[in-house]
Length: 118
Length: 206
Image (cartoon, rainbow over all chains, first blue to last red; front, side, top):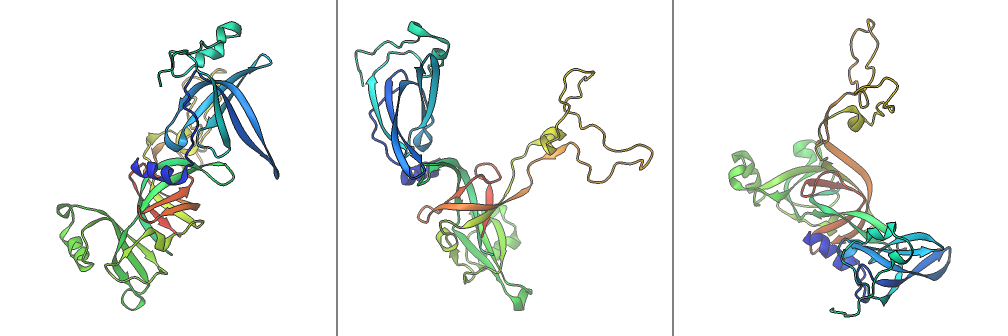
C-alpha cells in the first residue's frame, strides 16, 4: 500500500478544490477536447457520493435536466477537471445519497446546512 | 534476454498526458543479485542467474547455502535464469530496475495466476452452458454437454476440455508497456494487469 501511495504522490496532480462533501451543490468545470479545439463545460448538481482514496478518488454529481435525472462520475484527480465551486452546503444524514434517485420534485431537495462546522 | 525478478505490489490507475485514466500494476523489481554467470565454455550457453527475495537460512538447503555463499550474498527465495543477458555482470553484482528497464519499454510479465480451485467448464474454459432455464432443462445449466461419440471411438479423446483445477499455473502476459520507473524505491509501473495475487513473485522480461 505504501508503494502505491508513493506512486500517487509522484504522479497524481495535487488538487486544491474547496472541501465539499455529499449533499453539497457544486459546479464542476470540465475540459473537453474535440480534435484540436478544447472548451470548458460546467456541470452543476448535487454531490451524491464520494469514494476511493488518493489518486483513484471519484465523486458523482447528480442533476435533473428537463425532468430527466443525469449523473456524472468525475475522477477527483483527473487533469481535465479545471475547478470545482461549492454553491450550497447540504444537510444530509448519509454518505451516499442514492435515495435521491427515487425522489422527484420538492421531495428531492436537500436542506441547506447553515452552521458550517469545518 | 534481459529481465528482473520482482514482487507484485498491487494495481491502481494514473492519468496520462491526454487525461486518460490508465489501469496499471505496481511491481517492486529487484534489486537482484547475480548468483551465477554461465558461459559458453563452461555451460554450453551464456546466461545470468539472478536471485531475489530474502529467505531464512534454516529454510535453505545446505547445497543452496553453498551456492549463495559463492556469490557472497544472503539466501534468496527465488532464482531465475536469463539467457544472453546484455548487461555485463559478475557474480555477486546487484542489478537495479533502472539498469534494465526504461520508460516506454515493452515487457513480458510471468507469474503464477490466482488459484480458483476445482472449477466447472463454464468458468474454466468459457463454455456457454445451457442458456435456457425451461424447455426441459433441469440442473443442466452449467453442464459441459456431449464429450464425444459412442461406440466409435468408444473413448474420450485426450485433451478434452472438462472440469478441473483452474488457475494457480504459470502465466505469461506479453507486450506490457512500462509507464514509469522509480529507481530509489525499486518500483516499476506497468500498464495493465499482471498474473498473480499481491505479494506474488513475477518475472519481468524485456
